[in-house]
Length: 187
Length: 187
DNA sequence: TCCTGCTATGCAACGAGTTGCATAGGCAAT
DNA sequence: ATTGCCTATGCAACTCGTTGCATAGCAGGA
Image (cartoon, rainbow over all chains, first blue to last red; front, side):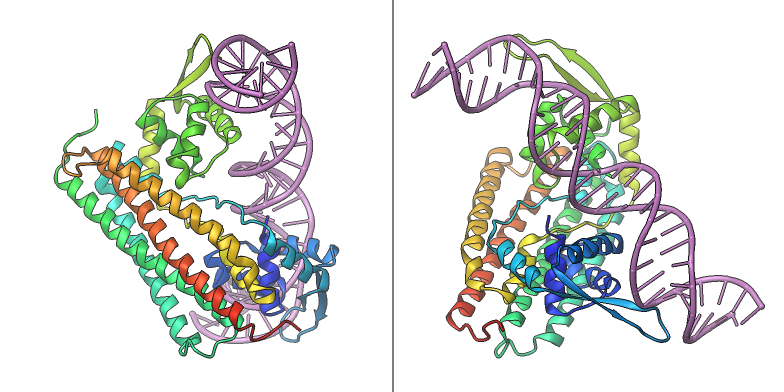
């Protein structure tokens, strides 16, 4: 399990409340680690009970009070220790790939619209990443360690989206080819 | 949930037992949809209860008997219906990316060995994919619909591994750069 | 001979993750 | 005035997924 660690990293980058963490997980971090607010609140309570993080009740006016969490020493140690452990194998769940293989037993043309929708959202995400890169890393020299590491993760996201776009074009070409020559209609 | 559907696709491509499915999920299908034998057995029982698949008890000698499952008509219908539904957003869990950002708060050099290990396993997987492509799709013309779709999914895997390898090299270069100039030691 | 490993299926318990709902004040628009 | 959205936290119930263990016959090697 590594949701604890993902939360810790986020809190190391900047302390925040459960609600704020949930929004971060919807945005930047959520691109490579998803979590709902329910999970986050539950794990925060456990982490606090374990002494990994410290809470500060912050009263606000005009909006509900919040609990701002920040990493405590045991949490930093746990993070450093986790870093030294081997990365667990990724559990991949690529639904679109399953559907593409499934299309062989149905109408391949029925997938075209879905793949195009997918393509658009990946194109939008790529544009979002590139805008973020221009905004946050305009000058790649003169970055500190934290920024350089954030940048290399962002570059991974960018390359992933580029590769995915090219592949989705390949998928669309294949589907169109099959739609033109419906060689083996279903029994 | 789509494990049912992933299993259905696999059974459409070829009927098989729970054990055989588990091995397929460890190999080809498991590259984009993981599942343990426990999950598979449980889901198979549910699918049979729902009438999606049919069972045939096969007695063997020299080895335990097995139950061979094959798709039934309601299963085919469910698959066709599922194909028409929009793909759910992927839940990404990219532990290595979290660790790379975490390295900012510890020793970036400690990650080098881990990233190299990762790199090797991706290189091995790429080689495996390429060998599979040469073996199964030596002549890309003259493939039927099912083979063309399997091929385009395989090409996706190949491109993913190539992109990942290039990115991991980028990560390694970044880590080495940081190790040479440990600019901001931790407070 | 014993130990390991493969085929084949399954139970039980646990932990992770999702979904629906509840509360509650403030703000903006209709 | 009411409706709906945002901030902020949380409970309860459920499903999904993992881990450890059990059974049981056969094959192969130390």
